[in-house]
Length: 87
Image (cartoon, rainbow, N blue to C red; front, top):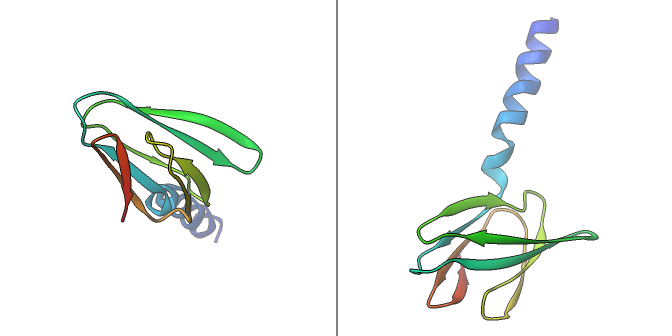
């Protein structure tokens, strides 16, 4: 029984990143997103062509051009031409 519980919990923890938002930088230069989750604020810098997962439980994101967007944690942000597009 303990093995079943452990295997179930391990599976849930490993699957958690699948529910996070992702961001892809399609520009030829590094771009920075400002991510606000609860009381915390951080900068997320993406190199050209880089994709990262972030914001697993909802957040606000300030795009490189200054636009601010609320995410629930399942969206994809594509950066092109210095601005972000949420899909």
